[in-house]
Image (cartoon, rainbow over all chains, first blue to last red; front, side):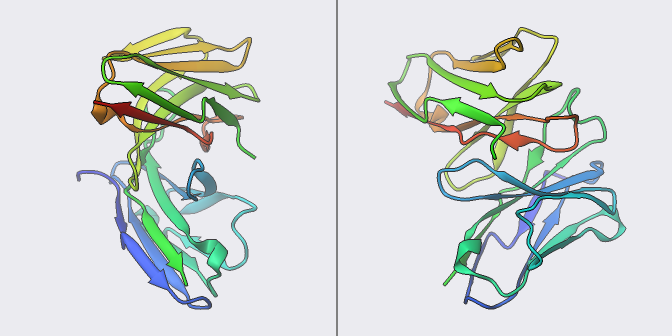
Length: 116
Length: 111
């Protein structure tokens, strides 16, 4: 287990299509986060899982966005009816239970989405 | 809205010089973290400083935290071209559930 893995690395889709991204966290980490980052900005929080439970969702996560983490392992982020404004880097991160005391987040390399 | 704001937005220096980046935040925090992001890549955790700590070192990195001013600074000493990246501060407002990131400082180190 070498880190957080995200697939695909790049996705180009036509406006109106649905897309799904996958994140495989570090196996010992029970917390998983999704962020969105646009050019020149910092990552914006989207949602957070502890094991299989989705504990928090940002207002940025419209009805077109859904995230799941079945069995508390990998997670998927789906965007339905994509819009050009959805073009961004989607980042996944994971952390162990005692985050904030001794550890930071481990991020994946991200999935860059381009909606044309 | 962003919890943290970095200053400056961009910094250009020569190899061997020191680079200082500042971060201000709005709410009470338990810790503050700094991350680095190379172009088009994910973020890498650099250092975490707890709210009861004032200074922390890690290799060429020195981080300070002033909770009375709600600010932190990241110093990179003897910079190298490989330090060229964006640097973000992040805080977990209200506890440990999520990190909120600033807009970042883009550092360019020229050989």
